[in-house]
Length: 99
Image 1 (tube, rainbow, N blue to C red):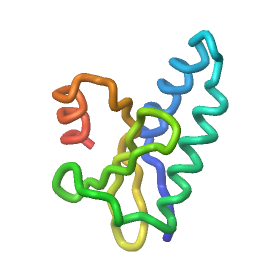
Image 2 (cartoon, rainbow, N blue to C red):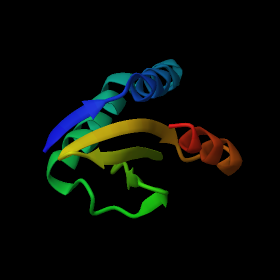
Image 3 (cartoon, rainbow, N blue to C red):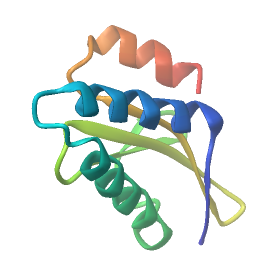
């Protein structure tokens, strides 16, 4: 399957990178490598995850408390958002409804 990461999801990744890079551990690069690996796996496993909202699937990251929200359109996985699961659930709901 093809894979496309929307601009909003790329901005989410940058925000996560900045958060981890500014932390004491400075693990921003590891964060990005892990999340991109999780996203890349959607080429094979896209569509097996539970639906979080309407046609929006949610895949949980293996190493970080982040979720990848995506749709499948014409044999293409479209990543809509990459969100920190520690955020307020109402904020997450509003964010994915607008994705």
